[in-house]
Length: 199
Image 1 (cartoon, rainbow, N blue to C red):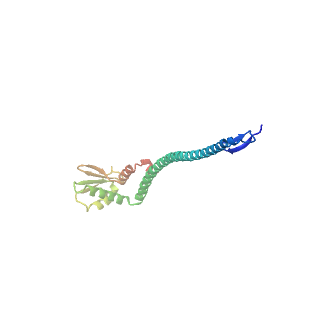
Image 2: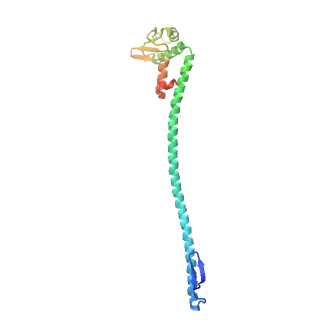
Image 3: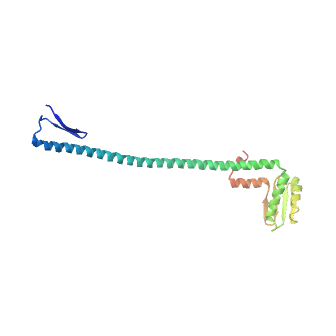
């Protein structure tokens, strides 16, 4: 059997096995061809809408996934930066304290101690009389530094006080004002473990 192609498109084809189309069938064949063309146009429009909607949905889903991944990466980077900042802060504090120790070691220790004793005495004056106890080798420098401040300051050489340390006794209590005491206070502020500061 042989077929004749009357109309074709992506959605379908009109075939006939009649070699001649009768006059009364021409309208039906024309309607069928128009329906096939309309079906092809509808199929193409539906395909374009589906592609557009699929692209928009894929784009929205991809953007949301990228935003989630970016947020996770940024949170990880932020946490790593926070850890590094804390590490740098601790190491900067330790480095600063080590530098102060090295500089102080190069200075005249009696003069440094005298300056620390003077500052501590000035902080306590004029409220109460002060007795400043220092190691015997530092007593002269501390006395020279403090004699002009006030007559109520008494400097005493005390063999029990370590070199570089300074103890201020007042009626209301005792204060240590030596360099290591000041540096330990700074270490507490920087939260640097004492073994790390000397490293």
